[in-house]
Image (cartoon, rainbow over all chains, first blue to last red; front, side, top):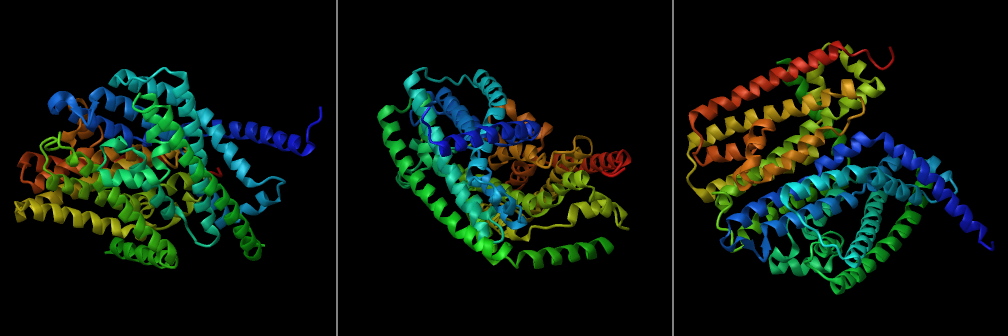
Length: 273
Length: 262
């Protein structure tokens, strides 16, 4: 085998971190379920839209019947579950409390530990999520497409969207190097994410002006678009176009993260040590 | 009164720690405005559709009062309930609850008022502003209805406190449940909208199982003059029962508490 030893060591580290983080996350399963149950906004929006569609003339609002709304909002609920991130909160805690110092001594950028930690949590979350999703589908009559190509596109967009959100939360968490608390900054971006991402309604039902603004941001391509794919409201060409926009934003925030991290650690060394 | 003096001291201490962080103060104001914008967008989306005339019998101006009560309550929760009550689980786990029990003031009182996140005060202002705006646009609110709405809302806040407190008291038995209050928040996000906008089957749940309707819909209905005397009497009664229950749970919990070290 002619492998780069550096790479092998790196993947070995990732594997070990993955196993420990998975074990770590199984301890918090009760908390994970509590957090899951608290993210109900998309379900409530879904119930209201379904109720309105039922009582609207023709049974449809903007081309959506009650069942279309059910499918869309069960999908956004599940997708939002897959996109959950708390790395910003952990980073700002580590920086303020000084617990970042021992992590800097490890021969690996803390970025990877956090990233693998989130992936491990997704594995713990998945079973409960699938059970709840089945219950919601049976209760509301939500239906999803079966085309494997669309599901692959869904998975790719969600994975990319998660990475994007991870980068942005990471950047905001790192602001703790300069500011004392970052929770309120997180909240501002989160609000943009849920309103422009399509958690309140399918984007096509928004006023045109808001739609035009939203299309310039990455948010609709990580939440609304994947859900449109599996509910049959969008096709592969839209997925490709949205994916490219999202990729651009992700690369930009990836670079921004690296830059902020370098600047911040330099400052931290001067203050904390 | 002793409790009022203590609350004044707590507020002063919270203010002086939090106002030191000026950038955070600006971010908190922006956060409150962004939250309000989402709340408004969520309602305006429905009224912007030509297919929807009114939301379960609520005109836009009346629905804005519901959004106002929701924003106000979110403010009350993030200023008062979340910063205090989430400390309980941590205190039980690490044993710092003992310091609190040793002080010559009622422990439930201390636990409930020690920390106030004053940075979220804009939520209160925006919430009340929106209620007043909606009521003024509606133009049919009498002083009597305003008084009734205020009383019903205050009873509702007492209910929310009792629910948050009981949820967090479960930490005496379950230990690691610092985020258990978020269970209520999950159901409470239905309170952004008049309960009549939701399907019929879920309305009793939001009224009698988790009293979300009492917090936002019913005070707004009172302002519209649609609440009769029986409900106006029922709400404080339910609040009183829930407060008594919450005190009972607290006393039982303390009775079974053995501290982290022993």
